Amino acid sequence: MVTYEILVDDEKRSIYDRYGEEGLKGEKQHNPFDIFAQFFGGSGHFGHQKTEQKGPNISIDLEVDLKEIYLGTKFDIDVSKQVICEHCGGSGAKNANDVVKCSACDGRGMKYVKQIMGANIFQIQTTCDVCGGKGKIVKTKCPHCQGKKVRRGSEQLTVNIEKGMAEGERIIYEKEGDESPDIIPGDIILTLKTIPHPVFVRKGDNLYTKETVTLLEALTGFEKNITHLDDRIVTIRRDKVTRPGFVEVIAGEGMPRYKSKNQHGNLYVEFTVLFPTSLDEEVKIVGEQKFTFEMISTSTFQKIIWVQIAIVSPNIVIN
Image 1 (tube, one colour):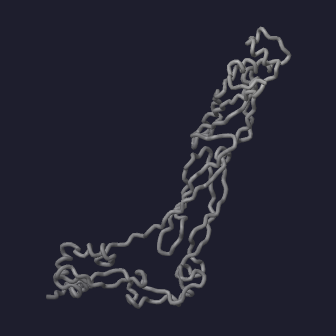
Image 2 (image 1 turned 30 degrees about the horizontal axis):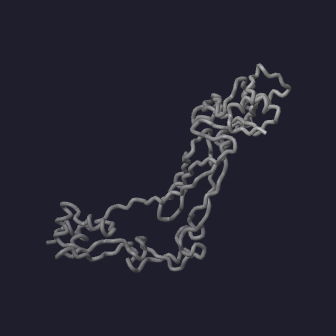
Image 3 (image 1 turned 60 degrees about the vertical axis):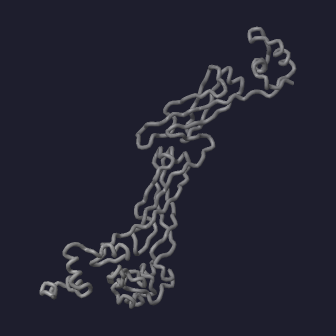
């Protein structure tokens, strides 16, 4: 029996008209049609409230010079992305009059589909497959986007490279991704990639480089100047014997520590000793006798040094 309560309540009257008294009983206890809404995409009374969808992110590898990371810099880049068509405003129609009511769902955006479950027949509310739930369709498409509502465009972003940013550091521009009338734009994510430097190699907050010295310099000492990333001259002085592969550590001359004011890593300088490839006859004789420095008096000190190395270096060629 239809009660007054049912007659004056539009929602309950609608349930009664569709499912009878059994539908009202189920409504009092729980919503038995939630499962169907999940399976068939229903909404409205038996469905779930739709959450606004977020689009995919745009990920880009941003190549930056090591010098720019050392000093910090700011620059603009253009990112290709999908933008809403400015001619139709995202409607996809040639003009406003070309957006008409969907005849398949009579503008409701929903259809009712009968589903058989055992001996029972249920009428399930589902999204209209013609208008996609919008309740409207486009009669004449926008000639600029061909009815797609979007087109390819670009976005100019200002990139702030802070001193000491790490390799792989991500710079995120929220909701600057591909645009669409139906979704929240995703993010644009820039991932920092360092362009290889001809002089320095970065490892964490430290810098590594190599210097070559002659054999004479390795034995008697030297002074070397290294041009740093900020164009300063870093001078290395040694008055001791420098073995091949020796590493000089210069504290505080590495990369700036990210977000740590006035703190830097270290600079590691590895030395390579340039050995001579041949010796003249005079030095060959001295080498064969295996004289020491104290026993030899010669006008060519460098040649004597070569002899000492020749004695301990079997691979050296003596002409």
